[in-house]
Amino acid sequence: MGKGKAIVKVITERRVKKGEEEKYILLISDTHAVAKQEPSYITAEPLVSIDDPSVLLVVSTWESVDDWKAWVNSEAECKLGISFVG
Image (tube, rainbow, N blue to C red):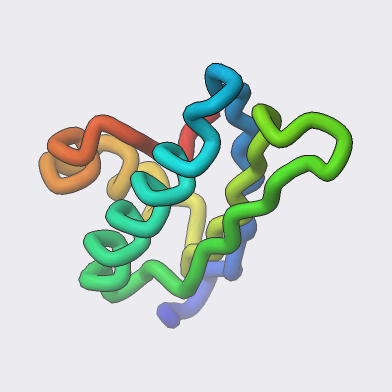
């Protein structure tokens, strides 16, 4: 991690159609596999609401906000059709 950078956590909330929660979790897994190739990506954790399983959160950790923004705008992320952006 370079000087002047701070590790950041990005929290994204998604509401998915009832019955498609598992499909979304699989997409998150695919996204995680690709994002792991980014040197600034640290981890991501999908969370499912116990009150409403159609409400999902993803907590992703990056070395900096700029690194996360670069991922969001990257060709690799766009090809997945899913994002850690809300």
